[in-house]
Amino acid sequence: AQTVTQSQPEMSVQEAETVTLSCTYDTSENNYYLFWYKQPPSRQMILVIRQEAYKQQNATENRFSVNFQKAAKSFSLKISDSQLGDTAMYFCAFIRASTDSWGKLQFGAGTQVVVTP
Amino acid sequence: GAVVSQHPSWVICKSGTSVKIECRSLDFQATTMFWYRQFPKQSLMLMATSNEGSKATYEQGVEKDKFLINHASLTLSTLTVTSAHPEDSSFYICSARPGDYYNSPLHFGNGTRLTVT
Image: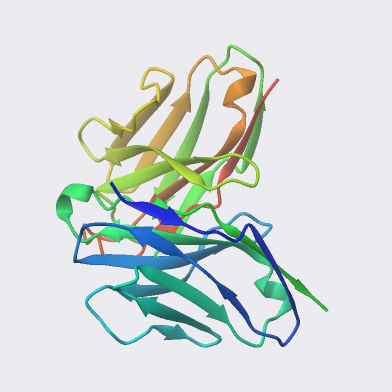
């Protein structure tokens, strides 16, 4: 079974600063995908970034980037130049690259990010 | 693209009644949809996998007779909470992905807040 661990329940960051969210996972699979989703107060789940395990290059999406360490099973998210609109719950998620997994995402517990003026 | 619409956004019902929640993929076909439940300040818990034209697959501990799922077409899945009780009050979210590729991101509906009085 796979588990996804987010050890930081809440993080606070000032506008324009940088914050890094940690995520570790446990799996015996070699091929999988990792995602970060954000859930703002509206509760709409929004994809932030995704990473294929077979790619060594870290994914980036504008102000969002990841540090993917496959051997350490770590997948942290860095938010640069934080904006008030980044305030949300952030979920790390894992999915096996296997058709028999039916595409089921395994979510971490989430980290609440609060961006302050 | 890849929009998932969920309806209603919120519903209040009396104990003992049934409530139907719809999940539609607006611009793509989805042979598989997923239903999640989320308690306040907690992560998403997968309830069941909805398969077009066949029975849903329920996660361990989820009562299939309580949470009826129907996936009658490639764009519509419904979750019916039968004989609802106050403990069924929660936030329910559906998700789907275009095609059957497990590595393409899931897209989420905007959720349904159910309150049972």
